[in-house]
Length: 178
Image (tube, rainbow, N blue to C red; front, side, top):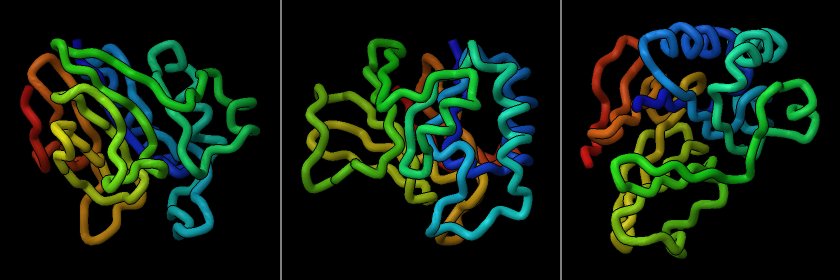
Protein backbone atom coordinates (compact mmCIF):
# COMPACT_ATOMS: atom_id res chain seq x y z
CA UNK A 1 0.00 0.00 0.00
CA UNK A 2 1.32 3.40 -1.02
CA UNK A 3 -0.34 6.79 -0.49
CA UNK A 4 0.62 10.09 -2.12
CA UNK A 5 0.25 12.97 0.36
CA UNK A 6 -0.21 16.63 -0.56
CA UNK A 7 -1.41 19.75 1.17
CA UNK A 8 -2.06 23.41 0.51
CA UNK A 9 -2.60 23.23 -3.25
CA UNK A 10 -4.29 26.66 -3.11
CA UNK A 11 -5.58 26.52 -6.69
CA UNK A 12 -2.15 25.85 -8.17
CA UNK A 13 -2.60 24.25 -11.59
CA UNK A 14 1.02 23.05 -11.73
CA UNK A 15 0.64 21.31 -8.36
CA UNK A 16 -2.53 19.55 -9.53
CA UNK A 17 -0.78 18.36 -12.69
CA UNK A 18 2.17 17.15 -10.61
CA UNK A 19 -0.22 15.20 -8.36
CA UNK A 20 -1.94 13.52 -11.30
CA UNK A 21 1.39 12.57 -12.91
CA UNK A 22 2.98 11.38 -9.66
CA UNK A 23 -0.11 9.30 -8.80
CA UNK A 24 0.54 7.17 -11.89
CA UNK A 25 3.83 6.00 -10.31
CA UNK A 26 2.08 3.25 -8.36
CA UNK A 27 0.06 4.98 -5.65
CA UNK A 28 -3.25 3.58 -4.43
CA UNK A 29 -4.66 6.75 -2.86
CA UNK A 30 -4.08 10.47 -2.67
CA UNK A 31 -4.35 12.11 0.74
CA UNK A 32 -5.11 15.83 0.49
CA UNK A 33 -4.67 17.74 3.76
CA UNK A 34 -6.79 20.76 2.87
CA UNK A 35 -6.69 24.15 1.15
CA UNK A 36 -7.44 22.78 -2.29
CA UNK A 37 -8.84 25.56 -4.49
CA UNK A 38 -8.64 29.00 -2.84
CA UNK A 39 -5.36 30.81 -2.17
CA UNK A 40 -6.63 32.44 1.04
CA UNK A 41 -6.41 36.04 2.24
CA UNK A 42 -2.96 35.63 3.87
CA UNK A 43 -1.24 34.06 0.87
CA UNK A 44 0.03 35.60 -2.32
CA UNK A 45 -1.84 34.56 -5.42
CA UNK A 46 0.04 31.59 -6.91
CA UNK A 47 1.56 32.38 -10.32
CA UNK A 48 -0.32 29.39 -11.76
CA UNK A 49 -3.59 30.08 -9.92
CA UNK A 50 -6.35 28.30 -11.83
CA UNK A 51 -8.88 26.61 -9.51
CA UNK A 52 -11.07 25.50 -12.42
CA UNK A 53 -8.08 23.66 -13.90
CA UNK A 54 -7.37 22.04 -10.51
CA UNK A 55 -10.98 20.81 -10.46
CA UNK A 56 -10.57 19.31 -13.96
CA UNK A 57 -7.38 17.49 -12.93
CA UNK A 58 -8.53 16.18 -9.53
CA UNK A 59 -12.16 15.19 -10.26
CA UNK A 60 -11.22 12.23 -12.51
CA UNK A 61 -9.22 10.89 -9.53
CA UNK A 62 -12.13 11.32 -7.09
CA UNK A 63 -12.44 7.64 -6.16
CA UNK A 64 -8.75 7.62 -5.16
CA UNK A 65 -8.81 10.78 -3.00
CA UNK A 66 -9.20 11.12 0.76
CA UNK A 67 -9.41 14.85 1.51
CA UNK A 68 -9.80 16.86 4.69
CA UNK A 69 -10.99 20.43 5.00
CA UNK A 70 -8.57 23.30 5.33
CA UNK A 71 -9.21 26.80 6.60
CA UNK A 72 -9.39 28.11 3.00
CA UNK A 73 -11.84 25.45 1.80
CA UNK A 74 -15.42 26.64 1.48
CA UNK A 75 -18.85 25.03 1.24
CA UNK A 76 -19.02 25.93 -2.44
CA UNK A 77 -15.83 23.93 -3.12
CA UNK A 78 -17.66 20.74 -2.25
CA UNK A 79 -20.23 21.63 -4.90
CA UNK A 80 -17.63 21.53 -7.71
CA UNK A 81 -15.38 18.72 -6.48
CA UNK A 82 -16.42 15.11 -7.12
CA UNK A 83 -14.80 13.84 -3.91
CA UNK A 84 -15.90 14.44 -0.34
CA UNK A 85 -13.96 16.86 1.82
CA UNK A 86 -14.17 15.52 5.39
CA UNK A 87 -13.59 17.51 8.58
CA UNK A 88 -10.94 14.95 9.53
CA UNK A 89 -9.98 11.40 8.62
CA UNK A 90 -7.99 8.46 9.92
CA UNK A 91 -5.97 5.83 8.12
CA UNK A 92 -4.13 2.91 9.64
CA UNK A 93 -0.90 1.71 8.13
CA UNK A 94 1.26 -1.07 9.51
CA UNK A 95 -0.57 -0.81 12.88
CA UNK A 96 0.06 2.95 13.07
CA UNK A 97 -2.96 5.21 13.51
CA UNK A 98 -2.62 8.32 11.34
CA UNK A 99 -4.90 11.28 11.92
CA UNK A 100 -5.38 13.49 8.85
CA UNK A 101 -6.19 17.13 9.49
CA UNK A 102 -5.34 20.43 7.87
CA UNK A 103 -3.57 21.74 10.95
CA UNK A 104 -5.24 25.09 11.52
CA UNK A 105 -6.80 23.67 14.70
CA UNK A 106 -3.64 21.86 15.87
CA UNK A 107 -2.30 23.28 19.12
CA UNK A 108 0.98 21.81 20.39
CA UNK A 109 0.22 23.21 23.86
CA UNK A 110 -3.04 21.21 24.02
CA UNK A 111 -2.16 18.09 22.04
CA UNK A 112 -4.72 15.87 20.37
CA UNK A 113 -5.73 12.91 22.52
CA UNK A 114 -4.44 9.96 20.50
CA UNK A 115 -2.73 6.74 21.56
CA UNK A 116 1.03 6.92 21.96
CA UNK A 117 2.76 6.11 18.68
CA UNK A 118 0.01 7.75 16.59
CA UNK A 119 0.79 10.30 13.91
CA UNK A 120 -0.91 13.61 13.19
CA UNK A 121 -0.35 14.42 9.53
CA UNK A 122 -1.11 18.03 8.59
CA UNK A 123 -0.17 21.16 6.67
CA UNK A 124 -1.49 24.72 7.10
CA UNK A 125 1.71 26.61 8.01
CA UNK A 126 3.42 25.76 4.69
CA UNK A 127 6.55 24.83 6.66
CA UNK A 128 7.86 21.26 6.98
CA UNK A 129 8.08 20.28 10.63
CA UNK A 130 8.31 17.21 12.84
CA UNK A 131 7.48 17.26 16.56
CA UNK A 132 6.79 14.62 19.20
CA UNK A 133 4.26 15.67 21.85
CA UNK A 134 3.13 13.20 24.52
CA UNK A 135 4.28 10.26 22.39
CA UNK A 136 2.36 11.44 19.31
CA UNK A 137 4.30 12.47 16.20
CA UNK A 138 3.13 15.64 14.46
CA UNK A 139 4.28 15.82 10.83
CA UNK A 140 3.65 19.02 8.87
CA UNK A 141 4.05 18.48 5.13
CA UNK A 142 4.47 22.17 4.24
CA UNK A 143 2.91 23.06 0.87
CA UNK A 144 3.01 21.79 -2.69
CA UNK A 145 2.28 25.30 -4.03
CA UNK A 146 3.22 28.07 -1.58
CA UNK A 147 6.08 26.98 0.73
CA UNK A 148 7.21 29.45 3.38
CA UNK A 149 10.40 30.15 5.37
CA UNK A 150 12.70 29.04 2.54
CA UNK A 151 11.23 25.53 2.47
CA UNK A 152 10.56 23.77 -0.83
CA UNK A 153 7.40 22.75 -2.62
CA UNK A 154 6.89 19.17 -1.53
CA UNK A 155 4.79 16.04 -1.39
CA UNK A 156 4.79 13.00 0.85
CA UNK A 157 4.74 9.24 0.52
CA UNK A 158 3.10 7.00 3.12
CA UNK A 159 3.77 3.28 2.88
CA UNK A 160 4.27 0.27 5.16
CA UNK A 161 7.75 1.54 6.11
CA UNK A 162 6.80 5.06 7.19
CA UNK A 163 6.33 8.56 5.86
CA UNK A 164 8.80 10.49 3.71
CA UNK A 165 8.61 14.04 2.41
CA UNK A 166 10.23 14.96 -0.92
CA UNK A 167 10.70 18.11 -2.94
CA UNK A 168 9.26 18.11 -6.44
CA UNK A 169 12.58 16.84 -7.84
CA UNK A 170 12.25 13.76 -5.56
CA UNK A 171 14.98 14.78 -3.11
CA UNK A 172 14.30 13.46 0.41
CA UNK A 173 13.49 16.26 2.86
CA UNK A 174 12.24 14.32 5.92
CA UNK A 175 11.92 10.66 6.83
CA UNK A 176 9.79 9.21 9.62
CA UNK A 177 10.18 5.40 9.64
CA UNK A 178 7.74 3.13 11.44
